[in-house]
Image (tube, rainbow, N blue to C red):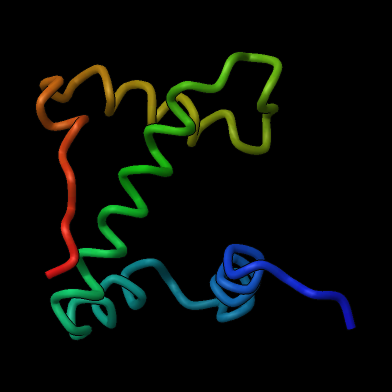
Length: 88
């Protein structure tokens, strides 16, 4: 069995559960506040990463996500794009 990173395992789990994002969000809302903070920081970091991709680093499969991330980062004040999500 090959060794998988935490990211690979998380993505495989999210894809395999076959539930709607609404269900996932509702379940996340019931999680410990520290876990919610960690997930929020991860999502923001992911959108920041996507927003920085050049056109040769993505294709039609994730173009919508990249364009969404770019628009989101443009619409936020700079102070919000540098927001830290501390784990207390």
